[in-house]
Length: 317
Ligand code: FO1
Image (tube, rainbow, N blue to C red; front, side, top):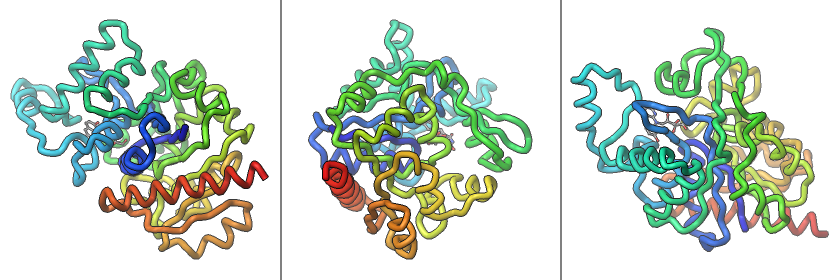
């Protein structure tokens, strides 16, 4: 069983690459739920939706979120009714939200709802929310604390970040649907997708027992750097690193995961960092990590899995 932690656009692209190359019964995609929120009576789960749309090939490549071939009639009509539609839900996307709402209202956990939605989209690997409990990423900025979507969508990531807080994390037990198979020794290892470490991966690591499990080093952990040539491929990561006084390079990513990281995949444009990363005891793979199309995503998935195997062999030795 291969486990992967994913959030955001980059995470969803590698999740798709992994789903293309790993037999579905051997892949568990764990998605961040810190971005989730309630809107117009619906439960929005952007990182889960980005993964299932990417894996099922329905995602809109340009926009990075939501579905391709989308129409916006409901959003336009809501606007005419005087609703502030600051968060755009497409007409086809709405069907998924209505299904999730009805499942949750029927007593389903978000993991149950996720399973039903993934099956409805023809996805056969496991796509599991990190926890069934409400955990919300709060962004502490120079203008005070903002919820993630306020910071990300309403304010377009302009406020300067100071810190992050994961409200409810201490009560957010990991979903057994992924934690048990990772903790049971049945896993060949964990891939940290090229997601924002602060707002996509850290919420998962903030759940009780998760960081402790990774620090027991019972399985290899490799990360794919979300930076290419000193810039975030998408999203606010580069700006966040600068505002936190950190360098915008693969060394900062490796340092962020230093407690449990065995290997890291970096882009060929960052090959100059390989020597220093090796000096820090990490196994390295260098390749094209800009997932411009599905083939690159597959190749990056294979490189990540090969590195995981190399790290696993090193442990066994
Ligand atoms: N991001 C935006 O910047 N503006 C939007 O209106 C927006 C709507 C939206 C609807 C569904 C969905 O699954 C994602 C959506 N996102 C939107 C992205 C969302 O903010 C996610 O948090 C990002 O993908 C980062 O994880």
